[in-house]
Amino acid sequence: MPKAYSYIRFSSAKQEAGDSISRQVRLSEEYAAKHGLELDTELNMRDLGLSAFDRSNLKKGALGHFLRLVEEKQIPVGSYLLVESLDRLSRDKVMDALSIFTDILRAGIVIVTLSDNQVYSYERTNENWASLIVSIVIMSRANEESAMKSQRLRSAWDAKRRNLANRRLTARCPYWLRPAEGDVGFEFIPERVEVVKRIFQMSLDGVGSATIVKTFNTEGVPLFSEKANGWQNSYVQKILQSPAVYGELHLQLQRDGEITPLEVIPDYYPAIMTKEEWKLVADARASRRTRGGVGKGANLSNLFSGLLRCGYCGGPMNMGGYVETRRGKHKKSKFIACSNARRGLGCKYIQWEYSDFERLVLRFCKAVDFARVLGVNPNVQAEMNNALLRVEAIKQEIADLGVRNESLLDALEKAGQGAAALQLIIDRMKANENKLTALAAEQRHAEDELIRLSNSQVDAAVQQNLIVDLLGRLEKLEGSELHLLRIRLSEAIKRVIARMDTFPGGRWYSEDELEEYRRDLVSAESYEADQIDDMCAKLDTEPNKKHRLLMIVFKNGEHRTVLSSGKVLDQKTPPPAEWDIPTLFESLAFKVFKAAVI
Image (tube, rainbow, N blue to C red; front, side, top):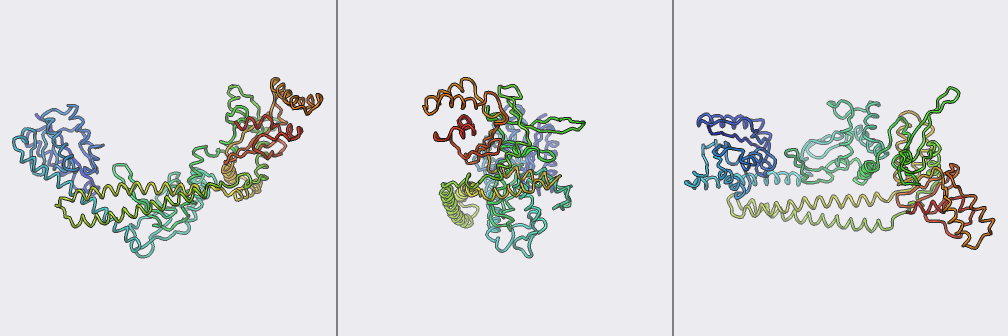
């Protein structure tokens, strides 16, 4: 008994809600029973919601799988493929659709169209080629119908977009908005807008989504939807990623689990913030993903996580802890030390009490003039002007393509469905649409670059004022408020500081280094022998915690050396030769700076 395979396909959700499946199943069962065929029940030959116009049913659907089985000769020759009509197989261009049709026949598979009981086989088609002409006509009509339907849908959306000043595209909108009176625009829900602003501010301050969610749920911040079970990470992240916050509507096509960007409509929603402000938060979040976010814990134990490096070997500095017992009382202490040394990889294991280290860094942050250290990049403005010119050029190119497409649409409507030039016009419009999609992506990239350049000009004075303000409040808070403030402080520091090279044992010298230094002093011919002996005697030959120091490297490459006394050495290159020797040794800069420049 020959085997029959029933192939069922439709492309819209409405058809799934209707009787399309049951109708196609019934027709297949009736045909198989009437003609003595065994109806296959193992293969899932259903492409529900997949398009035959864009070849989705071939690329990733059941029909594509069936054709591969036919090619691998796993479907017996003489089997039947039952379809409601030929347009269920393909709505592609005629020659492409015909190729699929004839390949199936050549493989010895019989195609039956159940709507009109037509039977197509390789032998029959050769004997009665008129049936092939009929199939070509059916395929051509299916392709034209799909192309025209696609164009009409696009034209309808185009008309809606052109009419935005008079009518909304849809009443759907983010939860912090509601449709305004009448048919135009949206308006804020004030209390929800304040929550959105708070989410962005907390994120900018370095607070992660999980902490925002926990804070909101603890405080009982009202939800935006009654269906939600408390604040969720996914929704907070969705808000942070939403272009609707700065007013843009991003139109997308979602089909078969894939999302294709179609168009961006600026100023569609009322904006809570500018795109520049939104991008600043997005960049801060991206930076935290790259360098790692702040640590967790009751009070954020390490303000400088991700910044600390060992000055001796370049490895990471990790935090450790121990419990000290005195007179029956337990005291917890934390320290930082080289991870490589702890793991026996050759470096010196020297601990630096974290509380002392934090006080030293915070005292430096409070006193340093960030504006003078960071300065302003003189090339940024020129780069911004170039980016702005590129954005304007892309906008003009998009406008020109839009005019051309309007002309093609007029020609398409005048040509009529049966005109010979129909396909040519459609192809040109598709090419223009592809170009528009590429230009839109290029425009977004250029605009993002413009925003990045704008945000790169760090307002150092503002950062310093923020850090000083946070430091002033640090001792007055406790609990969750202290935790959030330390997160803000950590993020503010990481916006201006790229790395901290720590030297917890100061700088010590080997015998060879001491001898080399002695030769340098002798060759200078500026010192007596007893002076040279005295100077060399001041150098440490073992780690000395009294001489510990750190080098703070800023985002722009500038660095400052901070001694354990709190003194800051204000230079970024090795000290000049005219420095007096006592200052040179006090700074320990002769070797430290040389190592840091590498």
